[in-house]
Length: 153
Image (cartoon, rainbow, N blue to C red; front, side):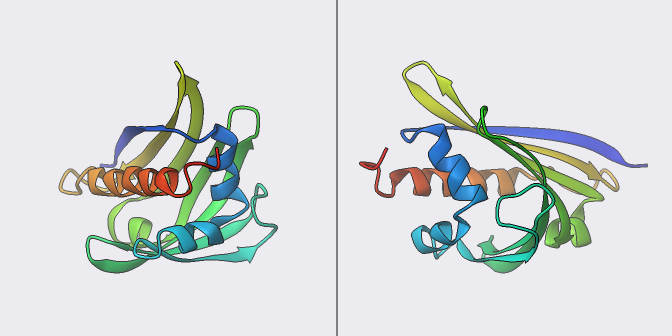
């Protein structure tokens, strides 16, 4: 019996939504330069960087272990600063979950901006934990990216 789940994390940021959207879609190598202790590489396997249908792999360290996450960009909404990444390989789907989708959305909230991570996943059984540790990791990564060169809004 599979169990579907959804987990949402919010991070208040100082940068504009298009800065984060562009960073994750078109300039992931800058993420590697800004947070090398967390993200080691972002490889393009197929398609054009940032285009729907493109396949990328992130090499990162999480919970003290080097890991890989292979994703296909499923959808992009420039106006709403949103990108949808379906995980198709790596630790998340090969060791833990039957399916895993990551959505990044940045929106205006009051005088600031909020980066929202949404995980939609399917657990193979009740013993598989919710991905709270991965959510904490990505929220911390956003904080690191936001703090870097924060004068460049």
